[in-house]
Amino acid sequence: MNIKMITDSACELTENYIEDLSIEVVPLTIHLGEEEFRDGIDIKPEELLAGMKEGKRYKTSQISPQTFKEVFKKNIAKYDTVIYIAFSSEISGTYQSAMIAKNELMEEVETPFDLEIIDSKCVSLGLGLVVLKAAEMITKGESKEKIIEKVEYLSKNMEHIFTVDDLEYLYRGGRVSYTSAFVGGLLSIKPILNVDDGKLVPIEKIRGRKKAIKRMAEIVKERGVNLDEQTVGINHGNDLESVEFLKELLKELGVQHFIVNTVAAAIGAHSGPGTLSVFFLSTGENPE
Image (tube, rainbow, N blue to C red):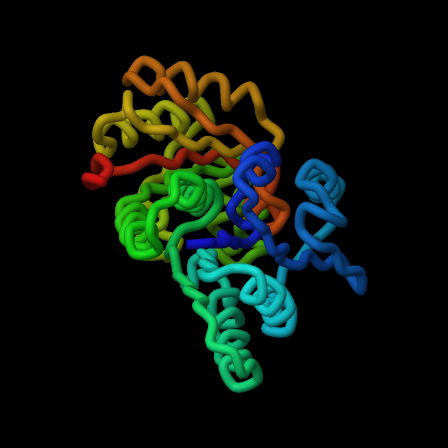
């Protein structure tokens, strides 16, 4: 069976994986005043993060149903099955846009087609790790049913643990109050958050960046299973020093395989420079 894998730019996979596994990535939209940019195409994360440090305020918007219709229509004409794994519906309306596009295509296209749209309830490299596994299964000739089963399992058990360096950016995005951001800045409070059933949830507040990173590693130890067999994802907002510190802590826990990338522009627009996240499974992979 000829299967095509599609995801969106929130996945944060590096270019080599995207190209080698023929993954199509649909970009979210970044706004700066009246200007619009396609995430990862017209604006790169480094440019956005540098702009935020200068005081520029970016906004994001979901992928439109029309954009999805064009992407889906092109691919259903070429492939037996098309699978789109979406950014969490609890954080973005992108999944809903994809469903609208599919429903419209069902009315417009006379030839039957097989288009699977999956709400991963994941974000960032958590989504990326799920997409990566599914794309690898496609290259091995696995069935659609097995791929979807694996995607649902990994999505359910993917952990997302992250911190930010400056609460001001979360305040701008409506994630914390002005008082929390102001007091947090004065006291050097670094929140630790996770994604629970697709929703962004704060779990702890740590005073000091280094202590927050150490606590992230402790959480990986508490929640992770078979860490030596996993590929662990790390993303960052232009802070390679913190990445190396976190990697060393995780290596002590047995982690051997990493994917590291800069936070996507669509994610960084909300979390800001200094974002640091780690993604891993809370269970071992289910049997093939």
